[in-house]
Image 1 (cartoon, helix red, strand yellow):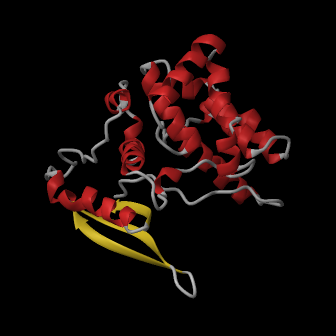
Image 2 (image 1 turned 60 degrees about the vertical axis):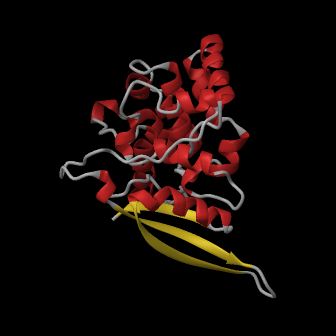
Image 3 (image 1 turned 45 degrees about the horizontal axis):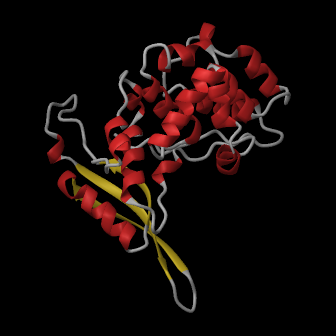
Length: 250
């Protein structure tokens, strides 16, 4: 079972077949709605038709889904304002909030300009366009680290994106850490459906190493570690200039 929601980019290309279109539509619903099962009467059928006809882009289709009644009922009506912003960052930008100031900015925008404007602020941002453009479905880019990146940002993204079930809950997962500017610990559930302790679990970390010399070489590799070693191994990979691609439970 994957702990990390790490999607390969899904793009709607020119001259896409109906099967390609349906793959994109499913990917948008899965990413934006957190894998919530969508009934036929909950689908954005008009927007789907416009996407099929080329009248709107994937980015606009993402906006329609996120501004729709189902997203609002799932992630706004029954959640705290901080939790709402956390999930917006996760679903629409593929990452955790950077800091307390970012959350406060979004809460103030909602209070001043309303729900639709808050959703559009993510989708119309330079970050969204740079990361996903017009026709790529948002994905969990927080799973990809860069040399020199702090472990804090990676851990916060990990806390939000460990499987689609992490969309549940009304309260913010990061409010204390962001408000106090504290590091976020990597923690696994105390039990799984099988009833065994999380400390007995093992994880596979997939990463890429860059070797600089007469020629710059990049090589992929993976390591398996116990839960107790996970956070330390992540830090060691980052300190050595490695880039983490994904973390999965074995």
